[in-house]
Image (cartoon, rainbow, N blue to C red; front, side, top):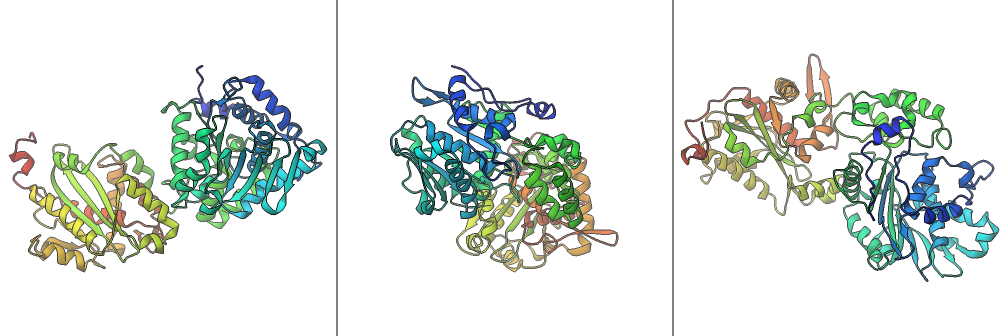
Length: 561
């Protein structure tokens, strides 16, 4: 049997207020589940209506797609994983409770375990309390299901199957053999470095339970997505758009298309329905309008948080008005697949920018080369961090781990290992006869003594006057503006590295007279060291360094003039 969970026309469907959820594979199974689901009562809503009375069609579409993927003849569920991204106040946790109670009723496996996994006790209660109330509000269900508040567990009296709601840690999920697992607010798990291991523990039972499924529900993150959430969101978008064919994965994402985000169309109440399918039910348009106005008044940080939570606007490169102006053009200036080796083959001359700080900072290195013939600037970056930063900066530990896996970041065991690695790369470029002869290395004057010592040591052999202390503060304004123009005009191409996208998104500007400053102080705790290294390199490349006579590539016949 063939089916698809892709929805490449999702934007047009949202615009027309049509469903973005596929039809059930087995309509009879879907209808049987909906007969249970629609009778469950939402106790905390006015007059305690049933789901059947209170819900919009999208809710029934989602329930039908999940339960309607079960092949009763083989005992196998054809969709094994579902992911839904939906803004706050669209009854996500209540719907989750209803789905899992329905699954408990419909389950046939004796002593099956059904689990709602939440990142905190408070979020766990957001799902458990509605589930408990649904049972107690129905006499028939109360006879069938036994509620145990003290352990947040509901047990089926006939099959002895259990629905347990847990606040996640390795102790609570270890050894579970869940047939159904629902993970709530995955964006919070994304901030936890060990969440992937936790999920593997919780979902391990699915290997021997072909009727099972894992359902992941989330609002958008209040920071750039990270960890398991970032991976699942990227995969969900790829399946939805048809870039990855995976019919066993069901993506349901309520978000604005890119062109509407760039135009800030989400600020128009006429467009609220795009991402709030429960608008007019659990979501009040007047509330959203007023809270949006308040968030705009309170400033960019408050606005970004509101947009992320109520409109699923991903926090990234082009959100805040105080972001660096080049951020708007950064993504479009990438050449995907470009590597340092390829840059070294294509350029006639290179300069290097370096920026770093203490043990809880990144050491950023940027290689900026001028391409032969086109004279475009080609950009590559890397960063190093001491492992202690994972303990001191737990708020970004997951992000750093992601960057490490991508190869953009290296974690070092000992101070000095990072400096050795920086020196090795610079010496390599020099030995290829590509490093500018005059002023090839630009550094932030603060905290670079170890780098200067290493580069001027006999093994490297650089002269002290080859290492330029690039003035920071308002004096860096020219380099900042030059970088903006080069990026926007397509004259600076970079490798599309996640490291730089993160740093560019973190950068905040401070106007000082006619100058614009990008400083670590303005950006707060967010890391921007590789971007500052970029500005240092741009300051030197703007001096129009002369190319040396010939690089090693040319002398070996590799490059063609």
